[in-house]
Image (cartoon, rainbow, N blue to C red):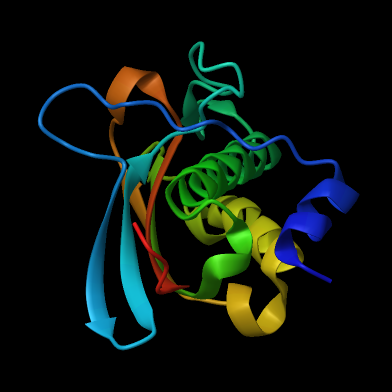
Amino acid sequence: MSVEARVEELGLQLVSPFTPPAARVNNRIVQRAAGSDMLYISGRGPGRADGEGFTHLGCLGDGLTVQEGYDAAAAVALEHMGILRGELGTLDHVRRWIKVTGFVRATSDFTRHPEVLNGFSDLIVSVFGEEVGRHARSAIGVASLPFGIPVEVEAIVQVATVPF
């Protein structure tokens, strides 16, 4: 089954990429070898599908539960997939998720950062499968994130070379 068919089967609504403010881009592709490139996705928060704000705001350990953090991280995965589709035309050009770095806004005594980031990782694996979706990952706790979002994730993805 194609990745695009899996997205449809799961009834997922990907977040359409927007042009970020300031001097940055959503992603950057670097050619690594004939037939494949590395695509670096900028840190993103749990954006709403309509592009109007965020699905979640708050701090883990101070008002947000681990489940709410997990859901916020899953929302970030939808945004990453939207960026990939926007850049590549189809998610079927993704060869492998390489590395994910997640930042979790949390109180100093919160210790369940990996469980929060599982929301991102679990959704990626359910869409792309074990072989393509499993990735190396870091889960880092931070005191604050832009706009009060609880989770920000950046990623490195290997993609099939396509004409850009």
